[in-house]
Image 1 (cartoon, helix red, strand yellow):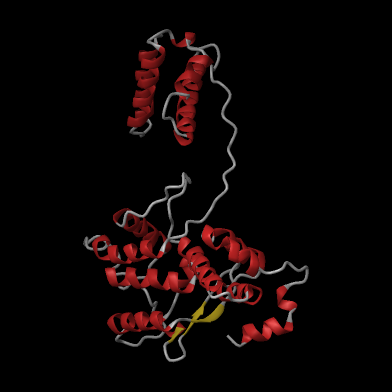
Image 2: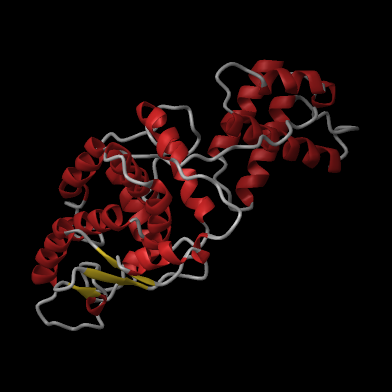
Length: 323
């Protein structure tokens, strides 16, 4: 059986199983064009390797095409049309080091400005005011997305300028102070959306009054990021995520302390407590994400490593309790 006939038969079989298989069909015929319409049993692993290693083939595309051809030849091997499966050795999995994206202040302004265009369609689950206030709260508190979505009206004390966060099994529950600017934004939003004063109602909700989920806001943020033209240009695999606002909050806070020549021995544990982080090592990772122009100052101000736990320092704990 020649290769083109084998491909057409295989495509019909996959489509009969309920798969559209348009992309698979395209790649298989591209493979046929590359190696020639020869007998299927004459295809060698070298032919497959040459096709997979073609120009402009990304790591993800390589693995996708490898899986497609492997399934194709396994099918015909079971049918008896090929004596062996001529697949080359797969590429070893590559270890990736993940680095959070740190938004610039200009990018955050662009995201906030783009919420109006992003949420103008009737199919959008939340309005622009909700989305904008949600992003401001994430950036202004460094909280997890789930913590902010679970906020109730009664969790925000406008008079004392504090927010009670629920935490989760990893992040500690806590009550944090917030800046006057964020309190003003939250109060304006509350006056617009919560005139019934129901303290048990979710603070952020959909147009229909339902609970906003992480899946909803994650999809909307991806669209918002495209509208605002915010993207990574450092070759990293992942594009900026909404969760990266948490890392951005920490790095911008540390950067401000470096400018002010603050005592990071004292301020980093305060940042850890504010963000609900139980280990200071997690907070210290944000030091490496500070802009390069602050590294010299950072070396002078960075905390000296000690073997005892920071919670065992009574002076430091009194300082944290006074915040």
